[in-house]
Length: 159
Image (tube, rainbow, N blue to C red; front, top):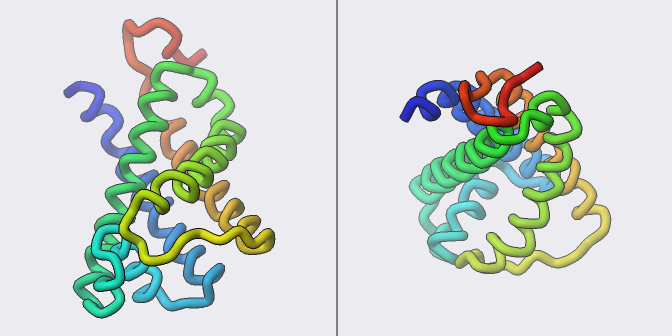
């Protein structure tokens, strides 16, 4: 419970900012408006129905995006609390985390979801998506670097 109170701000801010920027990046990369992008996110749960349900599906997509983003930020914060180097080298750590997020989302999360589309490899789009995930990881690490080190846990003190 103490961990949550101490890390709530960087996890929530990092997750919400990264998640929101990711929606904007998806709009630019896919040349669709936010409604379509958010419906695509909701389709991971609703399948094709997300594209028929309009704004309610988009609202669900936004909630899912933010929830996933906060969870991803919390995972990084837990790791950074245990490995001080992730905070000391937050820029490199965040970019590396973005690469991990790219692969997990594209090769595990989306294929296991109800989304009615399968990711197809396209070098240009994959590079754009990777850049978006590098930004995502960067933002999460930026906010996580500010969270306090855990007192009394070996290897977590900032020097």
